[in-house]
Length: 251
Length: 251
Image: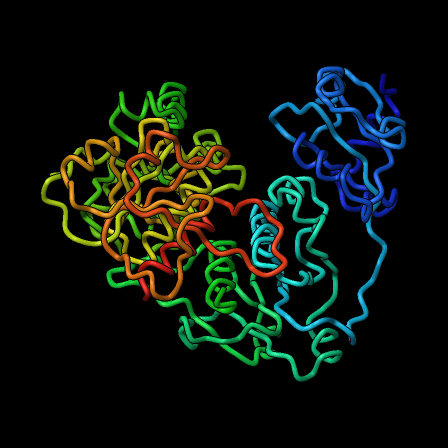
């Protein structure tokens, strides 16, 4: 059973302010929670689950069993940010680890420059997770990586792809020789020979694209070539990220 | 001023059933409506606009002026399917034209096999519009191409990319020699040498992927290679479509 105070404190986790205040975020859905319970990097403090979910589980370790708190489907719905009902939700500690920006391993990183749509961010984290992108840096005005819809659309990417809020200038100062790549109008067409698998790929805001200040820091201005007869003005931010990553990494 | 009956009939356009019954769909937002008023392929029957929008317009032709019906922002909100307020919405005739499946021009087409999310479909139509994909065929269980969120996310793609509901078997029977390409687990890795710019690219449902029956019709089983260290199980449907299209078209 959930008390009114518990429900209040759990629904508050839908807002960044309270996630930071409580140092927690909520992870919903059977698939992600199953993944979550199999790893040790993220600390789970409690799992709210229906009896139906609990009955379905294989034999669990006592340490995990102790985390599980049975609730009704109606209670779960009250704490959920999703429209489709779930069987299980976990409360997870926000990671506190900060990367050493001067000692990042080589490879491709993303910098999200004011990205707003949580579904786009989730899809982008999933791309990062697919292609082995090393980490995702976020400008301060980017949607929070622990927004429930980001977690949902990211399909467990947060378990493998580290995210960190930092501005691009700080990042560049720590790694002055790195490539900073961004898609712009009239840039160099990316192709099978782009060979730029190290550095930071900047992904702009859905409407405005890359900000003026960020654009000044780009070392490579890239463009996804339009097809013959193509009429669209732009691509969805996550779609563009996928194409650029595929083009750059030459996997 | 909008009457209660007009509001009822306009909000009904959010549902496919009533779009078909009325033979109309709704297009919202300044950018798409501006594009709409500059073309002749789609017939606009009325434009509902605020005084602020009307005042901003450059000199318009009488034929267009006659379509415009001034409403308040509050009225516009009542007929809108969007959460963010708009200045203008147009009622447009659903296209009645049916393609001759036996006489399709060569090039790349999409077949959406049970795609559900309207934002994904909009993003996919935008990809088609960017790369000059010739047309998008939709299975009967795919979200409707004139769903308001598809129109919104498609950013005007409907003006240039024809969509048509048809099953893949009918399409294949009409074009028995065509390539039918689809992304599956353990397929051939797409790369810079894929050279498959003609045929039909099948895009599966967000959760289930390509259906069993459809998979039997594939002539080419493709896979987007995962990067080193990549852990994601799959990519978002629109992201995968973007990468596959870029890989196949060699633009």
